[in-house]
Image (cartoon, rainbow, N blue to C red):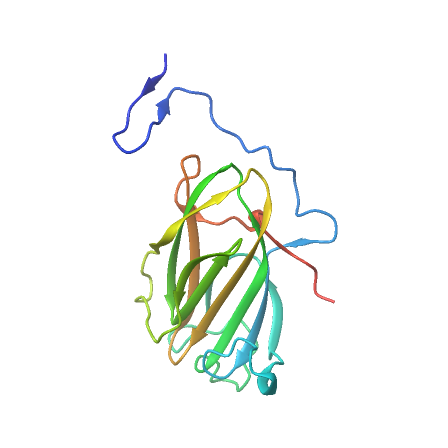
Length: 193
């Protein structure tokens, strides 16, 4: 039989496992991941025309990015080797889709400034010199985001580094999705030229 119980939300033990009905792959003309532009200049997200050209443009497979620091090697070409860990900004753009039509809570661990906007809803807007300790677990941020079943919606992420370690990690959870890093197949962007 089926047993249901939970003070916070109803979960059924013994019920059939929930499976997503999303089609395979990112769709024609897209690749999985998010397009990232890395720029010199503290918290430079490309808004300043004088520094609009990124020193690296690439597609990142997921948003668990320990992309360099004074305690870790850089995983991107540096603008001033070997000092690639201070004074830069990253802007990731693309689309995200949820496997189920539910509200999703997002979780972030970062160093430093961070803004995340999903389908026009700001999840976190903290453009300050504030950071989580290396290895910290992501914490819930903002209100849950209602997402449609397998519907691709825009996502924009800014992450700026003042000095020291650079990292960004984005996770999600919902009624049917346990807390986890967002799988690569749930992000898409257009291919690099």
